[in-house]
Image 1 (spheres, helix red, strand yellow):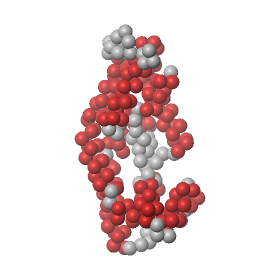
Image 2 (tube, helix red, strand yellow):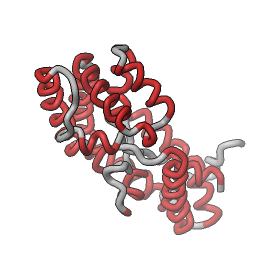
Image 3 (cartoon, one colour):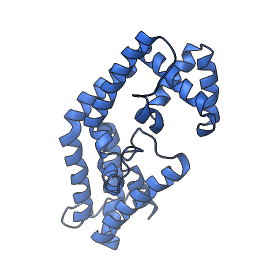
Image 4 (cartoon, one colour):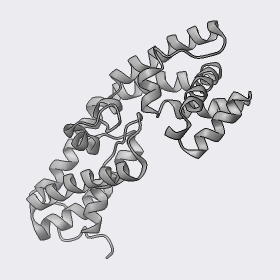
Length: 228
């Protein structure tokens, strides 16, 4: 068999560490899910507001234009088109802006060119987004440019974005961690899970950098278990 789940190996008595890790993932998800749904709906509603995203994209385009060397070629191109009046580029930049650490931390006080009334309305909604993010479980538990302390390198591994995300991660956790635990022991399974999760985040950080949008999920940890 490809998947090692036979001969009672899934028993909690034989593989307590695996079931402990699964339980922690489930407890975190269930306890934070109502808050996740509420705050995510509010964020999605904000991001569907075309006028808001249009103004935010124009503001971000100005920031990119002021410091072009700090941004990728793609963002510089979009910024040029946005400043020329291309509405599609402005909308795209509005989405990229919420991932940019500098923009999210400084946009509240920065001076932007444009319609003063539209900017005032945008800034009010921008502050609402910041407030929603401060309550959002994903932003609390996830690893991001805003939250990159030691604990977030651990907690991000137990946070998930929905039932589908959680379900498939837990399926592969059971399939591979139980086999490893029966072979190598409980302590090593926990060390591999946490170590691989931290290593996966480190690789992601080295390749893409941490954005303001949080990294979450047990995929890195489970990939390490699968590799072992």
